[in-house]
Length: 256
Image 1 (tube, rainbow, N blue to C red):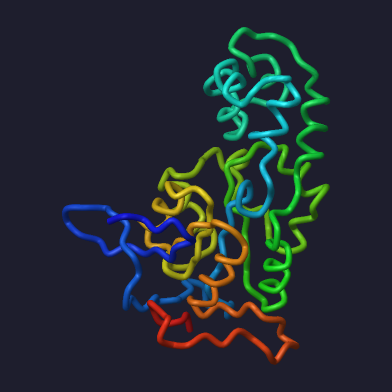
Image 2: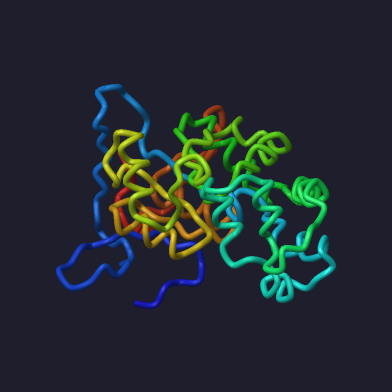
């Protein structure tokens, strides 16, 4: 089926012939923890770059190298950055092979360019703050190298969520299914007790295929709308004006 262009609530209905992603209609999620400890569900798993944080790679980094984005893609080593994200090489090794021709560059200058470029995507920090106030458990679920610490130093994302699932630490990356299963084992919850949010549809589909609820991020407003459709509390706990949506627009029962 065609995928909607707006942020979409996804689920999966397994069949013997297909792993296709289907819209969630009249599917009641079962939010059950394997742990005996009482915890608020669902658990929210957030991609970081392009979902919470602006990614400097597409504009700032080409400008740093005085190239167009197309020229940068043509010149850079095809796997060096992925190896760095996966923790297979360190930043000095990255510097030695970032470009196909092995040319040298100012690594510290590149890192400073990245630092300047990191910022919250519009409206996302406010949404994270309200989710935190409502006691939702949130984790980063990201393909990113050890430079995630530069993001943390600047934006203090750990004020809202934990840097639990980073490819540079786990050695695994989205959309490989084992990465999602590893997260579930760590969290000790059933897949349907997790809501996975990412701006890349392939990563959302992979989450759905292991049984998670998937949200395709477009912007903070559409994400807030979709979280509300799932029954996730958005308003401040001290605010009596929580969003009250017409039940007729729900495509699935809210989480309990």
